[in-house]
Image 1: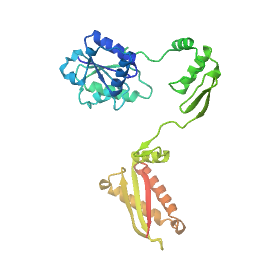
Image 2: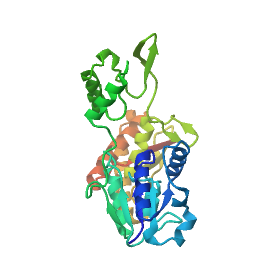
Image 3: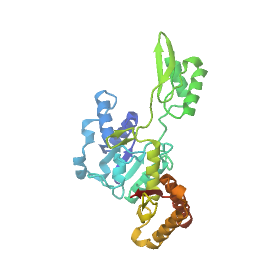
Amino acid sequence: PGRIIVAAFSSNIHRVQQVVEAAERSGRKVLLNGRSMLTNVQIARELGYLRIPDNLLVELKDLPNLPKNQVCMITTGSQGEPMSGLTRIAMDDHKQIKLEQGDTVILSSRFIPGNEKTISDLINHLYRRGAEVYHEKVSEVHVSGHASQEELKLMLNLVRPRFFTPIHGEYRHLMKHSKLDQKVGIPAERCLLAVNGDIITFSNGTGQISGTVESGRVFVDGKGIGDVGNIVLKDRKHLSQDGMVIIIIAINQTTGEFIYGPDIVTRGFVFEDESQEFLDETRKIVLDTLAGVNLEVLADLNEVKLEVRRVLRKFFNKTIERRPVILPLILEM
């Protein structure tokens, strides 16, 4: 009785065509949602790969005036991508599309390995908005878009390539694909199994993997691109999990006597106003530790910092089972 919302990959033009034809047969208008969906559909129509009658398509501004049982939306977001069209609808974050009781959502895609959690969260949000959800786990609404072995063999026999490079999938998939090619007669030396970053060179009738280039994920942080290393990322993760404790101490540069402190500042570790007793105990441990340090160690401030850090790490782990970043600051005055 309500609207039908189909989520699919915007690159799967054949699936979009199937949904359009089904909508036309059932007397429903088609609304496209999602930037990539709009772009790909426009390109496919211009090139003649997608046939949609102009009077079948409607725009978002037409939606309020259409009966619920005459609307079919095709949207992006079948994998629960955070900023996708369907996710925004499910989170009630779309300005013009709001789910209602009686709406039906069809996920026309597989649960890609690694995306199970985000897709499950998406489905839960859709149900919370009153929609009924169909996906491959509960209904036969999707068939894999990947070719079977026999279909791959057929293509290879039709094309008869001189060289072949399998793409898409994990390394084990690439290896299996490469061995399949050899079964249909492509010599092993002409099956170029490349991974991300490999350079494939074709010259004078030969092909080979000739080298590599730097590839992979690049971390963009503000105006910096790729300048944040693993150590910095590890520290940030550590800070986000257990917070930070700063111990400030001032000593006399000449005599080595303590002039000030220890003053303790925490961020993301404990709420200082409600943890005075715990922080007082921390100060006492720092003082006891410094009192037990011999003059030789006191002469090396780095050794003092290491000892304070070691003792506090043990104390925090024993009392509250947390491992904050501990930063001793020793000021010479």
